[in-house]
Image 1 (cartoon, rainbow, N blue to C red):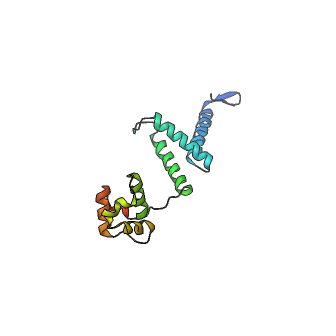
Image 2 (tube, helix red, strand yellow):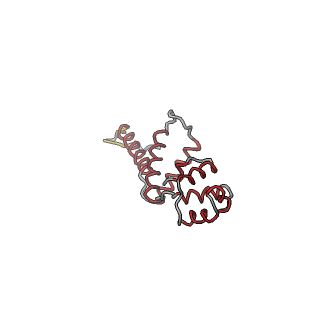
Image 3 (cartoon, one colour):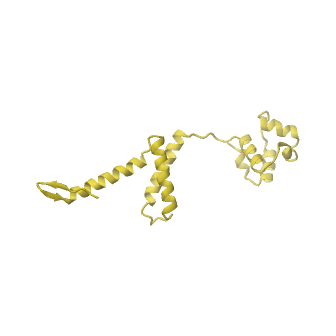
Amino acid sequence: MLSMTKTNGKTNIASTIKDAQSKAAHNIMHLLVIKNKSSYKTALAVMEHLMLNAPDTEDNPYHDFMILLGRSIETYEKEHFPTRKASDVDVLRFLIEQNGLKQIDLAPVLGTASIVCEILSGKRKLNKRQIEALSKYFKVSPMVFFA
């Protein structure tokens, strides 16, 4: 409920509306400026609620707010949770794990079991032929092996 501002014994509606808008804007700005872990968690909770309950359309009254909130969350995450680029070996290890394979399973693809071991230990780099063979074997773009 809005509290009415009185000036000289009269209610000033314009001032009351301005105060309410100012408070609403402050609350929104508080969500968009993520300063710490607590405000980050709040922003995530608000975004999750909006994503689950608001339609994903441009006529959604929260659409622009969701875009801004998403950008604020992304900025905070990039600063506080940096990720390193995956190396070709990281990608290969991931593909092996996701496909339930063992190192020995890639021997026919890469040449020999010792070559697989050398690549995964970092003693040997993947060459063009091996990248092409791996991309066909795992049905992925060769680009995934380039950092």
